[in-house]
Image (cartoon, rainbow, N blue to C red; front, side, top):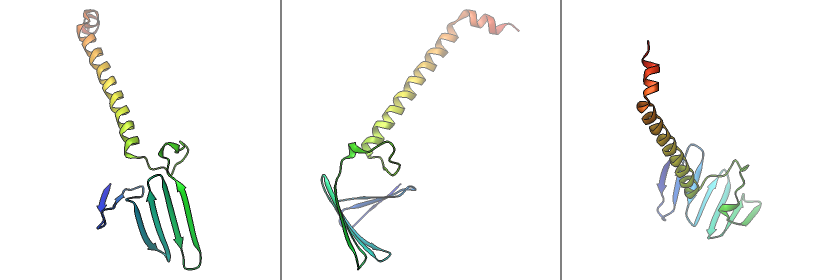
Length: 118
């Protein structure tokens, strides 16, 4: 991931999967289409114009409403932190089990006798 800070304080994150724009608003023009995106807390609006047609979309932002089947969802930092914490907990648990098994087998005199026979 690469983060680019814009002159107006906004930011853009570029990853191999796509582009994430951070900030309250941004406008750009690409392939003859002008786009303005405004983020106002819980709502956002997107205005698009190609010179002939003007289209505006207004909707609410609810990060908790993302469906598991939504393959276009980009996880929030909080979702990634929870996921990473879960993995770290599982790795620690597995590591503890291995340590206990190693300690148990190294102290087991029956196993030593079984495996020392040649």
